[in-house]
Image (cartoon, rainbow, N blue to C red):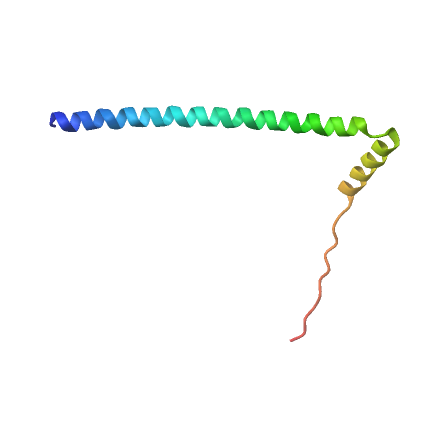
Length: 81
């Protein structure tokens, strides 16, 4: 191999290493932002709930429980051709 080919291979290897480092840094940054957003969303929801009167919280909790237990009924219709 010529000196130029070796130099090109070295540059390519450095490029790949730098690219992999950037990918790892971006993934770490994204996960940190995602964790912050989840935490902040939970805090904001809790603040809203804390501002509600007690009877409204109970109504909301009961509504959420009952809506999660409901099942959806599908209507099936026959078509005559």
